[in-house]
Length: 451
Image (tube, rainbow, N blue to C red; front, side):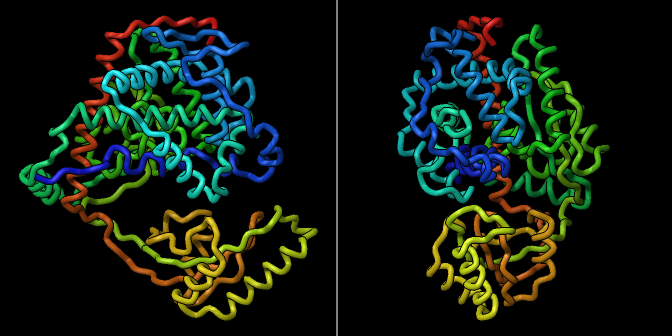
């Protein structure tokens, strides 16, 4: 019987970590002193350092105020929030709770003798750098320049990868999805053809103790305020949601109402697309949901495009009023590509001759997901096999060519889609149950004055 291999970690780095890093984080103005603290490090979670206070002790392992401060700064920076003392202070209570849960997960992984190799963590960081067009090995400097220890990101990656391995071992053969189960779900899907379904994102904030309900609600309201002010939902979910969907930036995918908690289902059927809900009380905590789309089951036409691109970097950030000689020469070179390139194969050859961190082939892209809007509008109108004019940014110039544009029905469901969804549901249920057991058995001491 087939099984889904790698489901728990396949996209963790791509969405949960790389997706957490906002454009504001990578704005060149924030990099000005990237080398100033390149050697800065802090002790791993659980090791008190001078100047910090103990926030919690979890079965003998210590979490300090320094740990909380570092994670709060990482969260604020990764979502584009200001790193003011007020913002950091509003995050600390929930971050302390999150670090307690992470400590419990790491302890369980250690009990099971799960080891996350350093090379796996290094590969995760390398993927973050590649997806955000950063030079190899620059992530630690970027974090240090903004006052965040690289150890903070490393610890978060280590726990996520270890917990995924724990769940794989915990579920074992329950991750095997039979053909009969898949066929039953496919038949159900066919019977529901034409009914509404909803694309939903979720941030789940657990309440492990009724005494913490008010704190969890206040934190949820703080998060909602930031989301409505422009913070990326996927980035916030990846940092704070305590479900396995956090690995996908909170993405639940396309779901029918009966697959959701009744309170959440009632809400999403009434929400406009793009809205962010108020806190919704659900078993075990609060949910914050966003409605990302609506469609009829089996019917969702969308435009997909394929592109090729070449990117020519600047040696220093562009000042439009005072371009350097290198920047002028780069523009002339890009104009030459615009005039000469007539096929996607030609653009690929040029990209090979001018390698950069940006892939020459970004793969098939759904047009309505392309950002920013100005680039989406450009691609929508471009003729096939005609290169664009040079697209100038602060860090370089791109030239793109449209290879294909095609209308597709995206609402079709494959057997692999069904297997993946069933695995995800089982993993989520197992994760919540195992966390409840770990909290119940653990010796947890909190020192609220230190948070």
